[in-house]
Structure formats: structure tokens, C-alpha cells
Image (cartoon, rainbow, N blue to C red; front, side, top):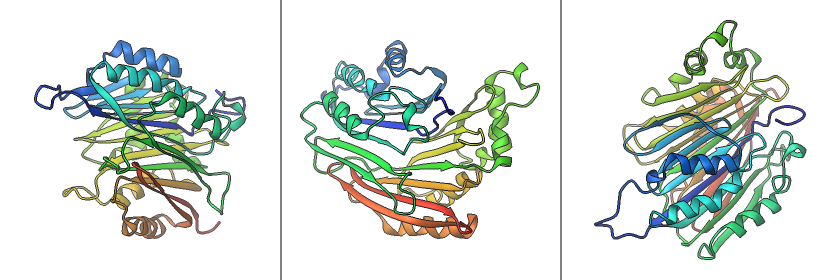
Length: 347
């Protein structure tokens, strides 16, 4: 807990692995074979715990006391808010994967600009120090490396920080990752994420389901199974599971430092799924924020400017949000990142 308030902006780490075993004899479960006790030890180093979990045939999803963890056969995504020590998870996760015959293929670390940067412990007070810690934790085989701070001209205090490292110059990832950060949430909408009188008699599971329903989060992706959790006296987290697709939302609703995030992984080429701009419009409409940033990571050659423009048009039409800045950067072996900043037209 920061002195001035809780830090909603998350740190995010993604690790992707090669399977060293013979493809005929290897275990398709991969990283999902890591036992819970080992994961719990890693999370203890990070300074968070598991509060809820769900799994399907494709991956495991954990709601944490500070955000979320997703475990796929050859990929781990962990994002944590507050003053957590996320980078302490890199070495033990690589070690656990190695014990399963998996070798690190790529790493991506990203975050927004903290609301309370002075409350962060070392090395999170400086992105340069964070990059040093990440690089020291990675094997030298990940030789294609790049760090970038993407700073919008309209709001330099809301920069997007990205570090990537890869063993290959070409990206192996076909999933498009969309990360939305929202601040200054609408006060009426934010009330959905405070426990109501009498809720203290109920457990966090039932209170979480009530928040999901009242806020309209259950309408963002009607196909997703939602694993939700309500914090006391306020705050909310959820993971959505839809086949091999994940989504996650985290909310810090307190006025003065309100924050919400929405993240999902998707493919631009799958049939039978909605356009990403429609999904983003519904997710952002839940919170009606005054400031929105969207970081979209395209693997390989998947960058599509039409998608970027479509998101901008739909958010302007449906929510009155104007794109004030659009930045793009390429990362060797890790694809292309597009960072867009939005505020209401009246601003």
C-alpha cells in the first residue's frame, strides 16, 4: 500500500519457452505441470497470493491478491499491482521450466507510469534499473533485446515502458495482446466495486459475482467463464476463460486514484469471434474513464493499421473518446507495439 493510495498500475511479465523434449514423447501439459506449492513459493517472493483459480483444457488462470497469473503449456503471464516485486519471479520460473525440459525462448516486461512512483521499491523507481535486473536474470541465449519508453506528447506522465528479449529475430507468437489502462473512473460506475452494507456477511466469491453483474462486466464477452473476486472494503479482480483466450480486469475504485485495467489475448484471424474494437468499447464503457491508454502487441508480421484505426473510430463514435496520440515501435523477435492515448472530446 502506497502512502498516498493504492497503486493500480500493474507490472506485467510474459515468459515463452521452447519444448526441448522429443515431440513424440513430450508432455503436452508443459508448464501446467508445475505444482501449486512451487508457484506459491514464487508468488511469495513477489509478495502476493492466490485468492481464486479456474482452469480449462488450454490453460490455468489464477486471480491473485495483486492481479493475475496465467499458465499455458509453453507460456506464463503474470501481472501484479501495488508495490509487488514482480521481477523476483523470473529466475525461479525459468528454473521450474527447465526442470520440465523447457528452455526460455522470449521475455517481455511492460508497465505504464505509476500513479505513486515514489512509493515503489527498488528497482521499480527507475525503468533503467528494472531493465538491468531483467537482463541479469535472463540467459545470454536471448540475444535480441530492446528497451523502449513510449511517451505520448499529449500526456508525458502516462508513458508505456517495454523491454523485450528473444532467442529468435522473428517472433513465434501469433496472439495479439491488448492492454487497456484507465484512470479517473466515472464515480457512479466506480460504486459498483465497493462492497455494499451487508456484503461483509457474504464471502468474496458471491460479492465478486454481484460486482460482475452490476457493472456489466459479464456482457463484455458472453462466451467467457468468469472467475471473479471482491476485495474488502472495495476493489475487484476477474479472469475470463474462453477456449485458449484469456481476459482479465482489475479495479481500484477509490476516488482520487481510481484505476481499472482490461487485458485480453486474441487472434486477428479467428472466425466466430467479435471485432476487438467492439470488445474494447464494452470494456471501457463499464468504467467511463477520463483517461485511457491502449497498448497493443502484435506478434511477427501481424501488425494491422486497419485494426488501430477501427478502434479509434469506434471509441470516438460510441464513447466520445478522441485519440490524442498514437505511437508505434518494433521489437526484434517480439513483434510490434502500438500505444494509443485517449481522452474525452470535451477535454
